[in-house]
Image: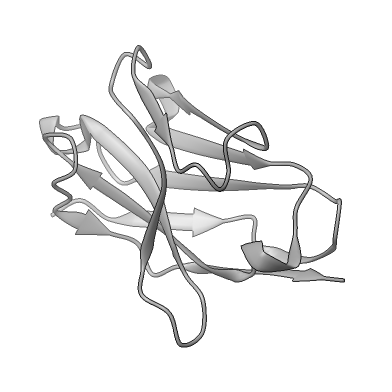
Length: 118
């Protein structure tokens, strides 16, 4: 059972930056793809970004392209989501996810709150 632990959330003013981290408890094939999703109050969970093992493929939601950067350090079993130029609309609970294949996530973290004030 892979455990994912997110960190780095918080309160920031619009235009500011935050870096989220997601550490996996072990390195397995089940963490081949790791991604981030977010859920704002009253809204459905939505895809933010995902990265494969080698980092050769990274997908972003249109809403975050050019502002967010996803990377991973396989030696640390950790992925990082650098979020710049944050907007109030980015306010949500951010969840880390891991899976074997793209768009199929088996493991989820507990979430970390990101609040962007205007």
